[in-house]
Image 1 (cartoon, rainbow, N blue to C red):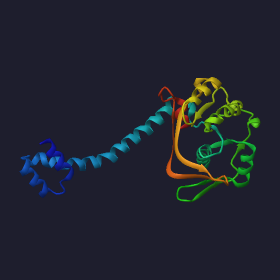
Image 2 (image 1 turned 135 degrees about the vertical axis):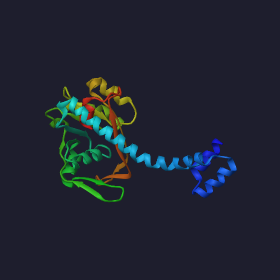
Image 3 (image 1 turned 90 degrees about the horizontal axis):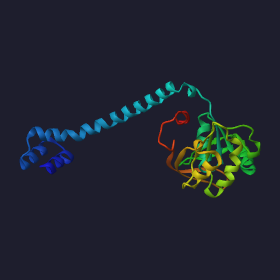
Image 4 (image 1 turned 60 degrees about the vertical axis):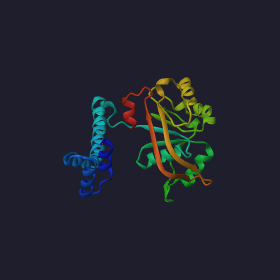
Length: 239
């Protein structure tokens, strides 16, 4: 009978057909009608539940700002290491929404960005161009940044750590977006465990020969947070 109920609930398309199933399996009319309504009830509830959790998340974020008023209206200086497929893409998107982002790059990349801008190609082929994005060389860094987004290749990690050292201050947060786990220990050894968040990104992108960053699929997101799982003041501030 349990199997029969599921059959009616999922596949019965009108009440007449449901009546045939009721006769065949001896199910009461009340039970059958309740079962038929279940999928429709769930389909209505799903968007309501999504809206409910969205409101809860927003309220939690606002509550955190009340509890920690020091981060309300905070102004974060973000240093993105490199302007390649990952750093260039996410840094560019932050620039598009008027965030204070500077790209730590090598001289040749800085020259190209100044000449051509930071060009992002979307999956549909459309282009987004950011003219003369802010860049800095390692030896030009004069003061710490609030957030450092580290997205270099694993083989370039040691060099990247040396490059960002002048940008790391007492309150600097390092957000690594590298594959693997070796970089966590290396960053802890260099700057201290308290400065390093956990992070990963999902994106399929490449840098074309002319320097254009080509995102090839719709997926583009970053997941980050404290490595102990807590919702900290600084994580909320970044988000």
